[in-house]
Length: 291
Image 1 (cartoon, one colour):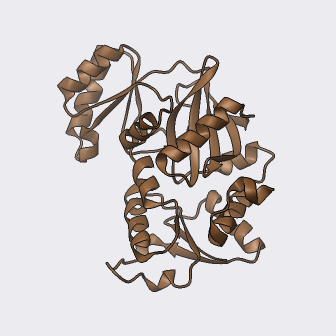
Image 2 (image 1 turned 180 degrees about the horizontal axis):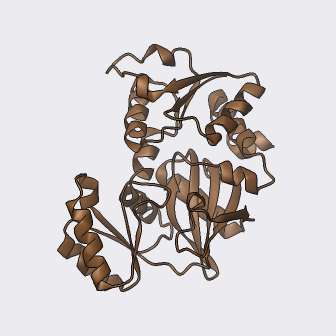
């Protein structure tokens, strides 16, 4: 199998995948997206002979556009442009989950400070303001008071990018000091971990401690439904515990897994490569590959 890996920086996650692919004898072409130029009809020479391309772009804009070009060229890419487009935008993400009947936190979107303040007052304090595009918990705010809401909303409204003028406001979910990250391939869980922290943000990138988590049947069902809702692929599905069930607050399309690989017994990159091999051979499921 000849695999193309799109990147702008090779992190430990990419190194884990590259090592696994090379250990199995697969040919790998690393493609630095910062150096490529994309024609409307003909792909760059870097993409000649590739069986599948894995999108590991850090920048959302690059991921969305490059996957669209590759699909136009007829080059298989993981994840698809459609999945990337949904997962890269929190509003589209939430809409896809809600449309599919997946439980997700109560969320509203507004386009002016005045309208956003009405939502904040409706939800009550605390509530959460998130950028529609972003990762690692950056620029997220837990709003505890009217004065804080006014200051944060006014500040966002003055920022240059139009995305900051889309006010994505979510109810605050009282989780037990942790959330759950599941790595899944086409809805089949590879491994799962809990991320625990005294801070209200429980991202591993923010320093949360991690440990393996055993998914129950309900969690597995929600992972499958959430994956299907955004178009499937190699995804990170984030859940929060709500009493005896869960809510899915986000699905990530260029998911990092180094912390997960350290926390669990499963060999995460090996399972991901199993899936990639199956994709290249003709769309088998992970369950079929493992049988």
